[in-house]
Amino acid sequence: QSVLTQPPSVSGAPGQRVTISCTGSSSNIGAGYDVHWYQQPPGTAPKLLIYGNNNRPSGVPDRFSGSKSGTSASLAITGLQAEDEADYYCQSYDSSLSGVVFGGGTKLTVL
Amino acid sequence: QLQLQESGPGLVKPSETLSLTCIVSGDSISSSDYYWAWIRQPPGKGLEWIGSIYYSGSTYYNPSLKSRVTISVDTSKNQFSLKLSSVTAADTAVYYCARHRPAAISGRFDPWGQGTLVTVSS
Image (cartoon, rainbow over all chains, first blue to last red):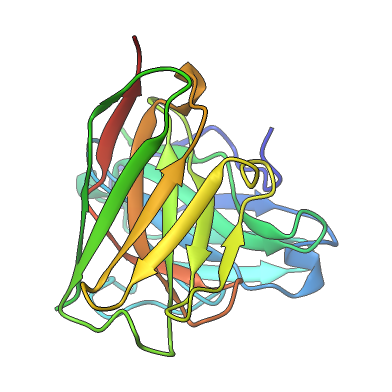
């Protein structure tokens, strides 16, 4: 059971928009700690996708965006492409656990 | 360009100690701007932070693993290492090293090494 809760799976057709939620609590996201997002295509290492809630590293398309409100965060992907098919993870810090925490991951399927 | 490469045995016996090293190239591990981290992923499962270390040797460990984990840094070789003692089959995972930035426990992991699979089996 992950401290940060993500839906196990989401799907969308090419060109569509999908969102992935990351629900936390008052000891992590709600406490103001940053949320970061990672993309992990099958068989590869995770790659940073969004940092500091809503910032894109250079090279990440602007189809990817992040937001945060209260005890939750979201990753939005617009103009879905086949290459977006991957697992996505959110990450933050939890003061009660005194450690870095990840969401359980969400598998994105492009139909 | 910063690159990280994990190395170490791919097979460890139960009750023994898992030892891995991460070689950092393209940047100095002695930078005051970063931590350096270990993260693992059991087959078919999610990511778990193991711990992070500053170039000075200050460490932060996952409380659930703290009693078994030691992370150390060798600035002369630009590398850092992981030791996990008393391993069981539950420790079978792909182990990743990553730069943890900025030098704050709430920072992000970027970039990651390619990962190395460690299997615990007799």
